[in-house]
Length: 585
Image 1 (spheres, one colour):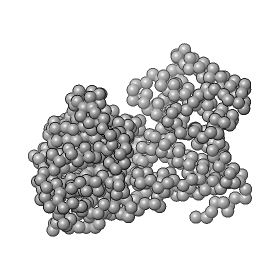
Image 2: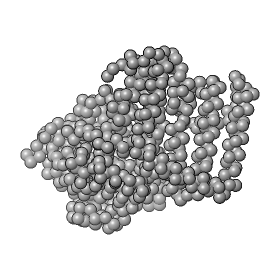
Image 3: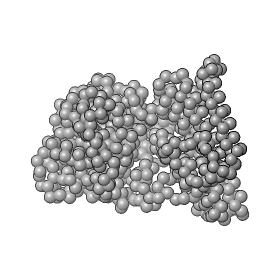
């Protein structure tokens, strides 16, 4: 790539080119999501405007308050242009956009910041005052917040004092570096969140020794090499989410859940889902169940000779596992599963969290029309949608640092994984959204026919461990808690600190966060938390103690992986996880 600096004669040209390229990239970034969001946003605000004309008194108070605040802001600067001023508007405690001293010390930028905050407050209060049903209200609040955040003065070079100061001090080099970063991300079609050159699968990520011992069109099955002389009689099968790559559970040695389980004396198997291209667009939800956990159960038993195994699943992998256990019950094979662990798993989708703002009949119809052309859902689009839920942290902060300030992101294994997206087949994705998020059929007994059987989670009597996280915005913990009230076997519920990822990947050595245990079950989520006990540190050791009840006897560790019918195919992490496919629009 040529050096952009050589193409410009002076800093003004650099700035002009940088601004043009940034605007172009951001206009194209998540264009499909933005177009649909803008449509929904406009429709909702048209309703607000109509309501304002019919009930003007309802809105007059908001406007009068806003005008008075703007007048107070203006007067504070008029009376003390260069002195100390009592702020009229302040950013929330967790808002890191305006922490630099220049936002407060420079009167121009201080005024710009406070005026923006006042306008933001007006828009949010107006949205919250709308006369909408609960789901439409949540959607309007989200769209309003998203566009407010997008228009922050911190996101634009000409209105961010930190960016301007850095450009001045580096004689424009920071903007040149930012332009290089921008061009690189335009080639990739996404925003870089980590130094991607710092990681390579099989070398410093997904390095727990093992081998692929079975594969089909849906998945590869990995068996990991034991590190202890003896192991638990009943092996562990991990079912990761199929909307991400599996190695979130096997990052680096210190934070690998896979390695931790192996080192604790478990024989561990793991499903590595396929990253589908157009040729697999007809793969169905049933294909994922039959070719995924149901096949893996039989293969693990055949390799180990164990009559039972313990299953661990995360997120949508847990939804798949729950339905697979229902199939086993109908097939009179439920006894083969000694225990089931669900990590941040939704079985009841009535309150799906923030992701629900993207899901309704209109948006599903729009997406299905696109899928007729693309055949598969782009993993990049899915990742972008999740990032939009935390736009200031996962989008705009990187726009500012990478492009406006010209900084290169630091190496971060979780963020590298976050950008290593996985596609979903059109048929499977449509089924997933309609039957889970829109119609909430999984929780309803006999509402779905799955693999030739009626899905009924209430008939599952397998001992169950639920791990949820208190700040999870993807699978809200009170929604995941409903799973404890559906399963009919012995239930253990644990609530971890932090969110959907950090709350799960919390290795003991860090001694970070906390978890709650021992609350009262059967009386709802609030009662459980009220009666639960907070414990410091990771939940991992707690699971190890719980799992001992279902691990069987200690037996000698196997010295070889696979068996004569399931020989080693290739070393872990295997081919499937390394496959990247860009979906043609």
